[in-house]
Amino acid sequence: MIKPFSINVPQQILDDLKLRLKLTRWPDHIMESGWSYGTDLSYMKELTKYWTDTFDWRKVEAEINSYPNFMADINGCQIHFMYIKGKGKLSVPLVITHGWPGSFLEMMKLIPLLTEDPNFSFDLVIPSVPGFGFSDKIIHPGCNSEFVADIWHQLMTELGYTRYGAQGGDIGAGISTWLSLKYPSYIIGLHLNFISGSYKPYLADGEQLTNEVLAFHKARAEWSASEGAYAYMHATKPLTVAYGLNDSPAGLCAWIVEKFNGWSDNNGNIENSFTKDEMLANVTLYWVTQTIHSSMRIYNENSKNALAFKKNEYVTVPVGFAKFPKELPTPPRSYIEKGFNIRHWTKMTSGGHFAAMEQPELLSKDIIDFFSKLTW
Image (cartoon, rainbow, N blue to C red; front, side, top):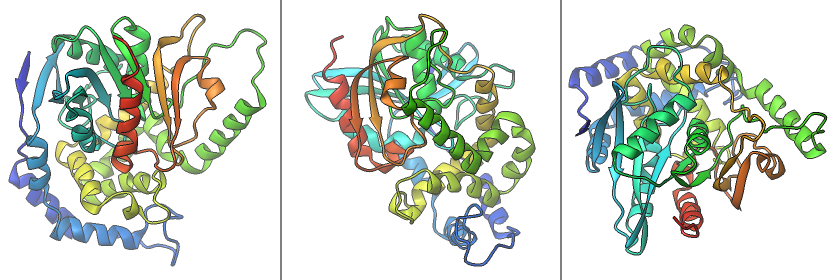
């Protein structure tokens, strides 16, 4: 069952948020340390003041509600999604999936770019992963990316689509990959701007990794040692850190904003990539829905169900990949092609992990370039 949905957060939740922000207990810090120990204290104080005095969640709500939003019951799980039909003579159904610490809000800049061309456009389905935003929190084990892919397929078929495309970054890339592995006859094409960290193609006995791949593994291990503490926490003991993050909005903000800073192509100033309003809209969504723990849990679930391809397992559908320069460590094309049918590869000149927010024009153009060349 699919029903229209609109967002209207109770005012008491927003009032409580402001009170908690005013009562924040700030830590000390090493003088002039900037972001080197974590989220910069002076910037956090600036951002929190803006959050308290200037940021307007009601404006965010109004923008969300200006598009068609729905709630779908899929096997008893309530899934929130935006659904915007394209205006083109040809309009390709496309499900776009976010990751962590993002949300469906990341994709809103793409909507006009992908739906309004009178000749070629997309019917956009932008769902919230279970445990994120307004979708249900799954409180039993097993809500991993493969599980979500099954939900997405049911959603798309309930919307009447027998053929559709998939796009994603971060966790959304893993979900979209599982969709393509499990339902290839339904998938027109797969467009990615990230490769799941657990990805391993099938290697024959005795097959040696190339120097290029060995160098990538070394670089990823070094990145994980210096930047990956959050992922180890999410994958092992997410509930422990969730008590503090679910109770302190400043703590939640610091946990998320550090990633917006570290993973974006901002040239040393986070606001080169995002406005305060964009960052706080995303953080406030996590706060008002109390989804920090439920969103982190998917790391734990995915750690038990890695994207490790077995013999003869291969993404056969056409795959397009957009490589942004400040993305997290990305396998070389030769390694990706062992598991994916790469038909389209674009090396971007700028942009990072949050491609839809940072470079919506570049990402949307690449999505259009890829899907417009496919037959379906």
